[in-house]
Length: 124
Image 1 (cartoon, one colour):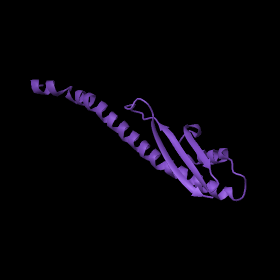
Image 2 (image 1 turned 45 degrees about the horizontal axis):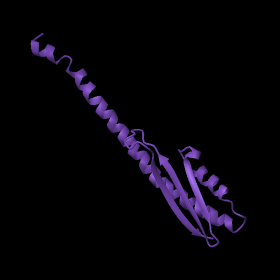
Image 3 (image 1 turned 90 degrees about the vertical axis):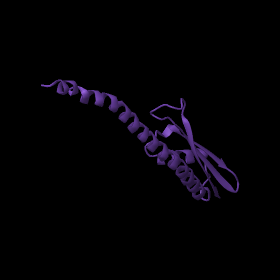
Image 4 (image 1 turned 135 degrees about the vertical axis):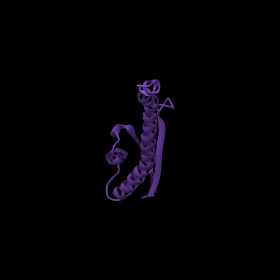
């Protein structure tokens, strides 16, 4: 074996050792971004559905904000039910639903959870 062949023998392992951590951090960042986009799309949807459901139920029965919270949390696919905060305001002429989530990224760059929220109003 020549001297140049011996010096290149361990270069593949060294390259993998240098590139793999960067690649893994990039993949985790992409996954976190996907989860964040999902959460930012889900919160307004949950608020709209909660307000719609509450406006439909309000004409037939006495509406309880706890029932709206239970319904909205049942729609939160892929999230722990108790992590979704729902605030329902029942005014005489309209229903307001505010839904929020404390989003905690895997790569904890921000230090504390980022609040993602959605709001919807419907007439009774």
